[in-house]
Image 1 (tube, rainbow, N blue to C red):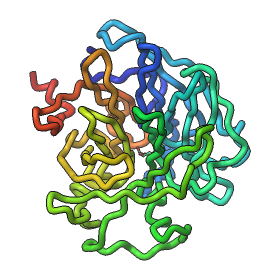
Image 2 (cartoon, rainbow, N blue to C red):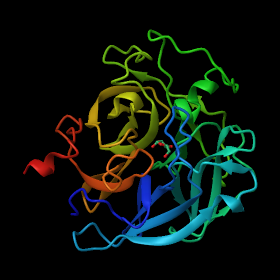
Image 3 (tube, protein in one colour):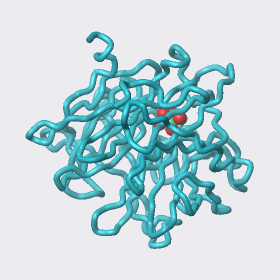
Length: 328
Ligand code: FUB
């Protein structure tokens, strides 16, 4: 296994959504651009325009990670104005569906779908965004019963708090620290994979007493970057806490929630954002994530990495310290 090194270094990559298709590993990242713009809470520094899909024949040390070139560019999508952020992919039948967030012509983040015949693309985008979609960071679970669920949402630049009433509010009041925290949205996808089957609903993340985690609980509350996987029949919702830079997870028995907070999956990495995905490959579990090693900490010049995950007997996940291998 490669030891927590950037998977590629010729471009900046972030927000990796990893999948195994036909025994190969495919990584769907954001493609960070190396401009010199300033960072701000609106995420203006993340000026991505296209997607490059990475692939690996296996996870051995010597196996190269291949950049399959441009798979989709925003110039080919009528509804997009800018900022092609973190994508994900799902396979149904012999088609691949790329879900991606971007700002529409009014500057509002929406989700789009693009369809391809191969996991590495190219992908052809639908002309309009998904009806009823909002905010960022789509992650799609292909459940064992044949249903597909789309999770998404992110605070601040991701505009999640602007949708807390169900309608878009440009300048919402600040959420009090003792109010219930916002969660990601979830909706089942239609059979053709192109729309939501229902109005997306906000997921509740509860504490050990069954009470909703509060907005002021920044070590545990949801911020962005949801991922859903199943382990021993249980649903694991993992996510970033944003301001405190942790990857955390909560578990539940229903893909629509609620979920109960269970712990911390990874301590902070170099750089402001944390964003991840989880896959099983040949009987082991892996975390794909990013940090800013190649740029020495520039928040919008990130690079994708992976490492192994271990579970405890009780289903909790061992916390990963992203740089502890450097001490050995
Ligand atoms: O890459 C842009 C944004 O930064 C993503 O959508 C968030 O999850 C954060 O990683």
